[in-house]
Amino acid sequence: MTILGTTPNRTRTRTRISRSATGSLIGLALGDALGFPTEFNDVPQILAKCGPWREMPLPRPAYITDDTQMTLAVARALRTAMDRGALDASRFVPPLRAEFTAWYHSPENNRAPGGTCLAACRRLDDPGLPWQYAGVVESKGCGANMRVAPVGLVPGLSPLHRAGAAQLQAALTHAHPTALAAADLTAHAVHLLARGTEPLGLVGMLRSYAYENRSRYHDRWLGDLWQRAEDPTPQAYIARGWDECQEILHRLAEVLPTAHPADDPCLTTGDGWIAEEALATALQCFLLFPEEPLTALRRAACTRGDSDSIAALTGAFAGAHLGAAAWPSAWADHVEHRGDLMTLGALWDA
Image (tube, rainbow, N blue to C red):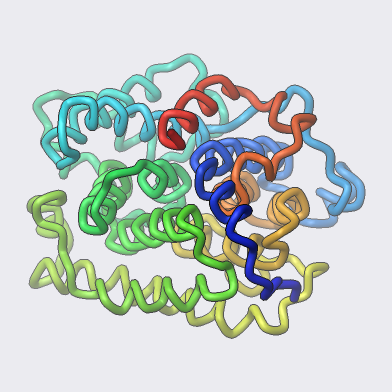
């Protein structure tokens, strides 16, 4: 496995942090666009269609999927909520609900969206229904965390506010506790990388975070969501999610020392259709090539699983780590919604 252990100099670290939001959002969209044509294909089919995986070209035009669409929805909702004051559930839910229902009705919502997101957003469209009853309590699909990167990038949030917002945006559609925990971990990983955390120690830090938060239920953000499940207490409800995430992070830690770039990462950390596997497999792709962002995206897109979501998260991690300069203009200039992504990134980088 190729993980660089060198420490970047101070100038490079400052540059990376100062442009991390733009880099992460553009990287997410690029991964999404690269993985869009390969989703639902196995690796031999992808190689036959795209050629050697290390040389996969960015499709032209570089169309994105619901992953980037919903990421933009979360980002816009965050901007709206924080324009009105300090972020909390009462300020975040209304614009987030409005963005999700607008996405649900959009004619552009034709990029193979997930069934859980569609069903939940249809319920969110009922103004009389409390949001806690919209999400599917049995679902922990990767839709919960494919879109959460903005929560890790927006400045000015305390750790508790970041965790609460990450879990809340997941719960609007995916109310399984593992979906909440995986979204929280994904936002935390993006935040750590944007703050200059070196990739070599990332998995250990995420495992510690999962351990420390195992019994913490964010009632100010989630309300009585836990009562929709069959757990006896809110702590028991959320602990189930953290335990499943801890299990996949343990597997990732075991795999990384011997992982080979030529092997499909889905073989060891899962196909990514569920939230904790999407997190772990995207982390594996990123950590195989932490200083080679395009190679990391190509590895993620050439997988047998949920290729666009795995590659989108890989791009979010790589961009948070390396900044906007990670993406050559020959790629970044052609991704769909580039203007929106750049505007939000510039706002938060400032």
